[in-house]
Length: 413
Image 1: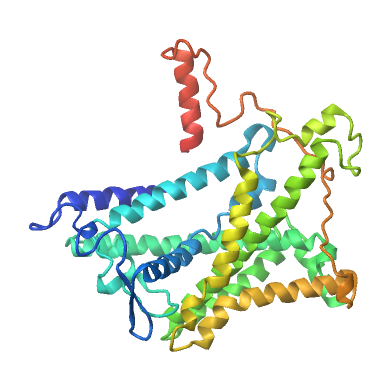
Image 2: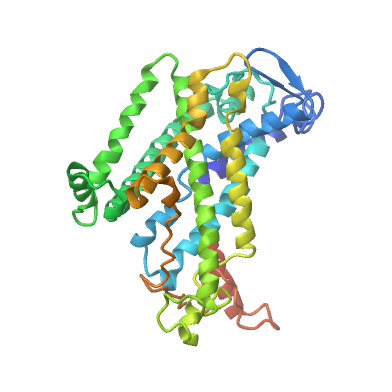
């Protein structure tokens, strides 16, 4: 976060001391502007108009989605957090990271655009799918164009450091997810060797699933593909493959939330026959989203889930639109759409496992289990992250100042 803030301040300072003869915000004025005027396809054809602008936006959106990989870390670490009922770290963390990404990433992209036009040759890439090197990074190019010494090396080194930490973060997420799956025998095929592997992945030592960590780290060997002279294309395909899987996962999570929302509403109204003491007001209050102590709730959450499901579906279906422009690339097409094939294959295999070979017997397998484990409510009063002043009539008093400082610290740290 501090590095992104530094990049924002640096690029604003470079815009203030811009070269002589350059007007203020010159990269956002003619002949550049706030949006691209055309899109160059791999064949060399230059497309113009609204369709070209939409295509350029769509490609940049897929690249931005790659930066969201790891967003789910907060939820994965929930089991290793402090008391969630009092600290509410998952609720605060998910909201803070969303705000920081929206605010800081947008400001960083906007301010670096002060100093680098989108037509600069180092950032222009007409390939279908590729992932450039450090010299193609707009944050490295910005100080170079402004003739700063040392800054390009520092920024490039920090990018390498960020990639390393992202790899460690991905290893954590993968190993914990794999360990969680290993604790559910029904997920795995009922074969002796597979169940043996599952039991090994389930084992932990001092709370660390070493086997799951080593198994997940083995995929790091893919990094040796960078030794190839065409590494930018291979990495680009891996990135697009990862983005497709990420988008599919987020779409499925949105769909599962819609089902969860319906089940939760039924339990709050006492219509779920699987809930013990379903008519008890205290039990029904545990599932009531209007309860002030309900752990996590946001406005329009159901509508957001519908929007996420629709958006993810559209992104998955059209993420490889450039592969259809001549010349057609089989490798790029496979990288864009093999994730859909994997989803279909896994779905069919699970249907066969639980319901047999007859497709007429296949159905959605949802337990709708809401009481194992029993839901918990937040116990913090007032709720963490919520500003509750002592005296709203006299704002400028010391107790209010302390509460405001504590509230600000929760959201800033």
